[in-house]
Length: 209
Image (cartoon, rainbow, N blue to C red; front, side, top):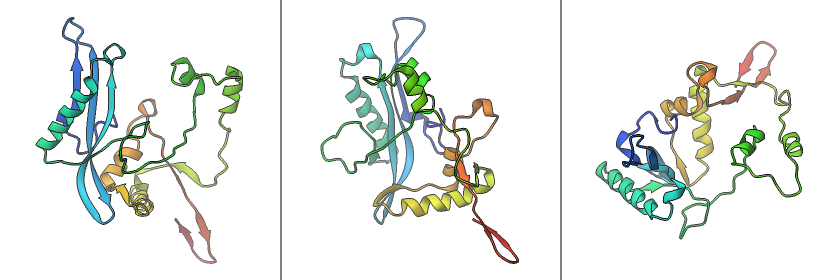
């Protein structure tokens, strides 16, 4: 829900298809879009990020994906948005950008039990748990959870980093607060963002970066 309810989200960009043959009205297909401000070289414009396209496994031969994409496209056009970005696990014709990404499994056992991560050939469950085990303490000094006072600096650092690329989103402080800062108790926490405080000791003053 956090990924869908961005600060300027539009409810009409959350498109779901429900069953009507029973009282449960189960969700059979879904696609969503959230507003995003994009920068391509020196040009900045409003766009939409398409995500979470999913279809029930029993309906994946019914050609529902093109129907959902066409419908979310129509709804974006109604808002005056004519460009959109999305990602895919395969190379589609003429991609505007490609990347190689790496991820680290934090709770491999849960991912294996839910069927998300398969057991590699020649490996055992115990070996995979040991391989993905996290250390008890971090090796980076000064690392702590992000707080409200860090939003402005984090936003500045993020914009500086993204400025190195020809294609990148532009985040406001409100968006940085939404995506990186947790609000509420730890039981509902879904985001853990960390910052590193570096102290420079001088003869008479101490600077914090």
